[in-house]
Image (cartoon, rainbow, N blue to C red; front, side, top):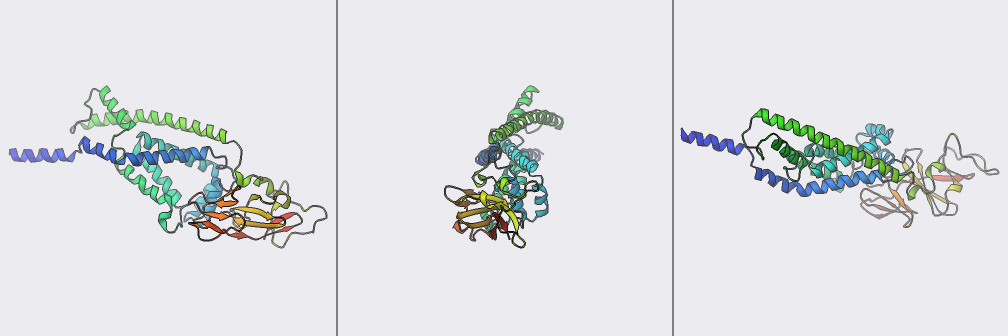
Length: 357
């Protein structure tokens, strides 16, 4: 009889993980928490303080990135829909990254934050990272699996607001800290209920602060544009209110099938102007490397389709995703992982207007 009791006691004790083991999990996952938390916070803030992020005329803006991704994504219809509401979804992504980063770093609803980070990474995997070859060149698949241990194990109660608030709640209820192995379900439920309410209030406060910080970031970002649109992309594109017309005395008629994309006078020698390719609706670049010579390139990196940005001092197109670099005059690859040059768009000048043909 006594042997049976001892066996039952040992089995019951082993079924409850010890505090030291839970703490050990917390220490193991702490470096990952710090890295993912800091990275997600940085990513969110970077978007809020980037003047081009919500700019529909910028090739590095979220709308251009969405349109470029739609060409190769397996969920292209959904991506095209979100591109039509780029401001809403762009802000949602930035706020989501901030919320995920703060939750993981502070240990506040860590598993929920990890799930959010996993879903964000999965969405990026299906869009900007889709088609990356070999697959391990894409960072989003790595982030997706990096969030998985936190989704499974949480924060282990180490350096965790959840754990601090839960222990404070137990002390307020005059209960033992840490919780004993055996405790009534009613007591556990009450402790959990109070903890959820208090952490919810804190999460809401932090969320409001993140929104306020984002608003400040948008104010600082202002309405400026990056170097790729320094010439004013919107001013160079045809509009129904101000159609492009050839100067007086210029040769009559555009080339057959040509679509006007810019006035020749707006593209100075040695500069680059952003425009939208009328055939693919993707962000593209128009340049005049020497007087009378006009070249145009699709802005999508040939590695995985991210929209490149133009660096004026070096006269190079640079991919923000994996660092590919292309020559500003020829579109040739200067640095991988891209292997093919930028796709050239056929353009001609007629009567002072540049046409895509």
